Length: 107
Image (cartoon, one colour):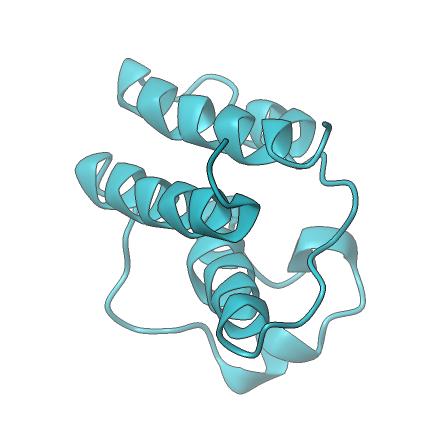
């Protein structure tokens, strides 16, 4: 069986690639104030794809880099299915990567 942290890192890279392939990757981060949101997924200040790029990916990489414990459970896919509802089929690979990410934490 593969190392779980390696699998998580690979999944994060998969999410990044899917964001880029679906043209959702952004070169400019949200305003600093957006990062102070206390709402889940910063939904009051960020678009769903911004949260993935600017919050989830860096925080998870930081946990891996510092060898900190990873979350025991993750279930982000339902939010992103709703947030991306009605978008083009180009989102399908991103949702597949998010499903893969969630699955790593559901045992």
